Picture 1 (cartoon, helix red, strand yellow):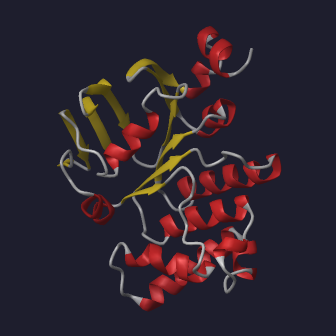
Picture 2: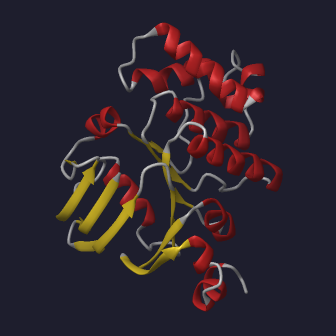
Amino acid sequence: MLRIEHLSVWYDVTEVIRDVSLEVPSNSIVALMGGNGAGKSTILNTLSGLLQPRHGTITLDNTPMANFHPQDMVKAGVVQVPQGRFIWPGMSVQDNLFLGASIRSRKEKHAIRKDMDDVFQMFPILHERRKGLAANLSGGEQQMVAISRALMARPKLLLMDEPSLGLAPLVVREIARSILAINREDKVSVILVEQNSRMALKLSSRAYVLETGRVALEGASEELVNNEDVRRLYLGA
């Protein structure tokens, strides 16, 4: 579905992504792991069109996408759930979700309502709070709004940047279940950037470990769980 080949991304005079290649098969979850500053979020922002690569190719369903802008990526079905959520606190939960549909320029009212019912089924608490201000939600509920808003854009590929960050363990488990449901039931591919490495490897079928902008290790997630370096550096074993 998605193929990145020899990607290089620079901030001014600094190369932060160096010759990165990776693939995301259709209907899969792929994890990006690594320490702070490894380049994980930079890759997501490049895939979102927020950053432009210096070198390399990005191909989505055999279509070159390397120099597309954010609105073009969304229209192509690439939607990001950003780190920090970035929901609109002064708007209601429901209006935040309608905003997700509007960024894809969706106008079919019946289908939009159907999709909203689907996300309310995934996160029932949002249905209860749909008319309240997003500012009054807990951190976990705001994360649910961010995920639901992205789903309202009907993505083919969902880019998730630290969805469990700062959340209580019970909420983390609910977010993890939602990621699996999005992938398995909605047939949406996911790139998951997640500091909770155990969660990332458990949810994904394949993982890439980044170090200072390069892919240091890659493989099937079930194999990387038993890799000595991964266990020592990321799993605390």
